[in-house]
Image (tube, rainbow, N blue to C red; front, side, top):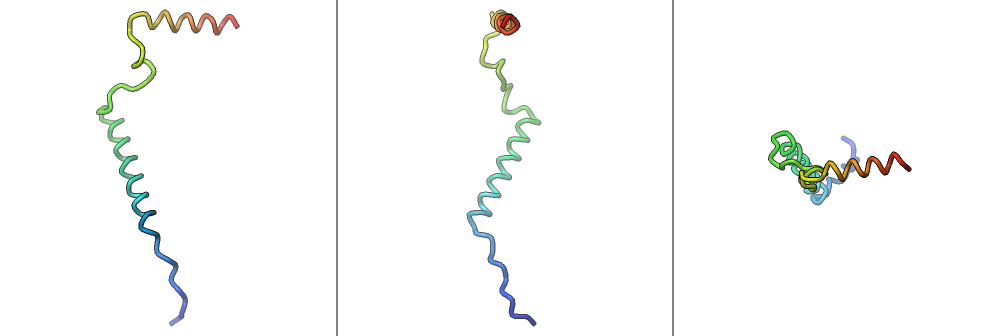
Length: 65
């Protein structure tokens, strides 16, 4: 038998952080797959009335410059 020291165990805070990170990632994936989180994106913040005029004006200005 050798008298080598065992490497130190992983600290508890690292294990807890890892578990929380995995749970949050799984929650995010489940929400995206099932659609529970709703429809998120830039279109959600603009009303359907007049939003196409806004974007066409922006596109027109971008092409002019």
